[in-house]
Length: 391
Ligand SMILES: Cc1cc2nc3c(=O)[nH]c(=O)nc-3n(C[C@H](O)[C@H](O)[C@H](O)COP(=O)(O)OP(=O)(O)OC[C@H]3O[C@@H](n4cnc5c(N)ncnc54)[C@H](O)[C@@H]3O)c2cc1C
Image (tube, rainbow, N blue to C red; front, side, top):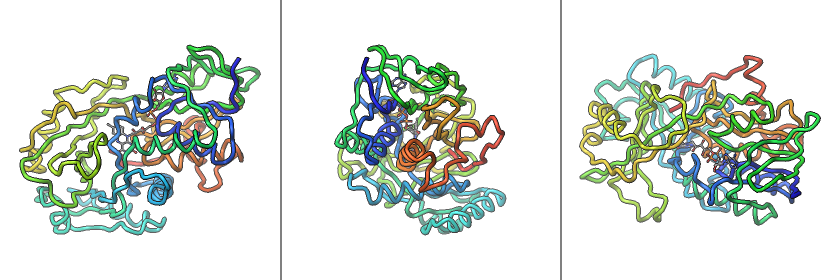
């Protein structure tokens, strides 16, 4: 039987980061098992690469601060681009909420975030109809990264330090004996190990159940429309989000071409469709285009007049938890750890996640940042977090 000290299940950005951070701490025998023939076929490959510190909860803000700093200073170029995130409000109540968030973000060390009035918003985003906009918040260091570059950077770093990755290996179940993990069953046979880290994104619940653990992670399809404008996009267009409806848009980036070759006419826009049922369907549904344009009509004539680039529209899976926060940590089964349920923030929080998991596994708890509020046990104890600044 094959063996590894620690098996990381899932080779997306999160599994790669966990392996990287374990290897960096000197664990020489980490094995990543990935069911795809290549990496990036899960949610990481569908992500658009937004990164922001503008959240409501302290833990999300701190995870972002750590990760933004990491992206900025990493030896590996993950194409971090501080284009900014602009949230706008159309009611006084929403504006108060954004003001409170900015206050908290600043208190926690976010330096580049400010409350902005409607005139400033119009200046930053000239293509926005601001008639009903009362104000907003702008974070200048928020912006974009290349999710695939981040994933490959972590993977290269892990492999260079002695980790291994095996493709086309489907983990079918987690083997537990006497309350401890002893290995995993795969389509290629059994692999013995001391610990497993479940990094299977939207597909985590089913696998956790094989070890008798109920992990509340629900897959949900997310769709994004890619469109092309006649005139170039305004210079320095940030990510723009209506905090009321979640409708958002940003310049598009084609990760298959060099950043300098990306056109200035391509834009992404979408909204969170609350009617979308839980499923693992990743087909793009054409009727979504009409719904998005309907929302764009009032908000931006410029967006409404764009032409859809159908072959670049995308759909992928969010891995939602009941409180829209990640699940990080251990459980009652010895040697079993989770890094799941990022609810749309897994790429941006991957550096903090990898470090947290490596410290939880090797030191018993994360010392660089207290992530205990994200533990899997919080749901049974009814200690859910509250964050509404999600999209
Ligand atoms: C449309 C869209 C836009 C997004 N935009 C952003 C964004 O702007 N910023 C951001 O931070 N996040 C964004 N996200 C969320 C982000 O993509 C995810 O949170 C993140 O990619 C999760 O990474 P992961 O490694 O956990 O999951 P995945 O990338 O899904 O990786 C899980 C891996 O596990 C493998 N796997 C599953 N089951 C098994 C098994 N039984 N055996 C072996 N392997 C298995 C899969 O093949 C897959 O490769 C977006 C998501 C979508 C869908």
